Length: 309
Image 1 (cartoon, rainbow, N blue to C red):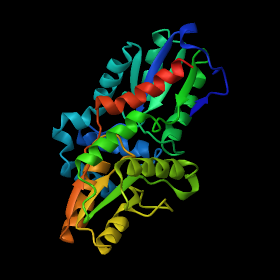
Image 2: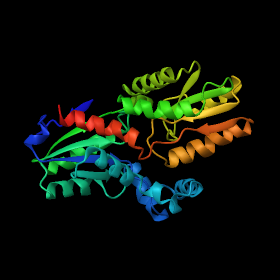
Image 3: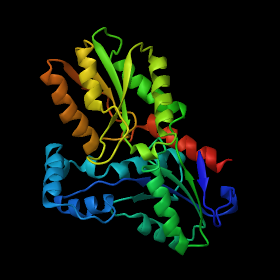
Image 4: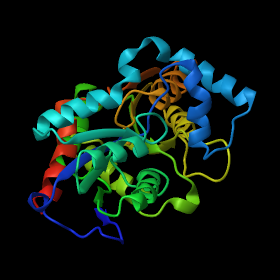
């Protein structure tokens, strides 16, 4: 799925213009002082309260964010892998809520003389508040660069490498044991913005379950904001239902995400683990792709397809 800008954004072959690849990611704080501007950016300029900052700080403290360089530089690692797979030099990385910002990246791209940008977001599924947020901000930035055309790859989950990564990881977890409940999860979204997001996520989880031969599994939604109406059921409620159904082992598959970060290491590995273990059951989570070459090849394939179109 692709989107082209309404102004000066025709589908032009890469060999007819100087094109840069722009990898877009959410961003993550690297030190405690980053949290205030980070959360303010996420909340569209609304400054968090002291209590909200305290809660967020505690979560990052709990996952060891400040001492883990890999967590702090995950975007750079993914860019490195993608750049190697594509064998190109013209690749840039920008974050939605942290430096290097999207404004900084576009400025660098323009200064280098590129006249076309092909963008891909690390989120595999399209949602209005996910990839859509990058989309809207990028188009706003590019109003100041009328000579630069732009296209965005809106989703890339439906590539064989995406499925093969999760299939292989799930198979390694011995998911067919009688007492095991497998729970697929993706980020929740406000119910008013669901669009095709729910259907695409459900289609992907169905395909992975079929590849592995799962007969009984659950779909859950996680990490919703503490306000408004969000897509459910929540992963917490699904875990509780699986335990009621007799599960003694819970395997979490957060396949709507691509890397280790607070929504995985805290929301899954602390909150969900506590629910499972307090019930006397066993908690497991599949490894996140991070910069895994097979997984990143799904993104590379989506880029090649667009360039060669």
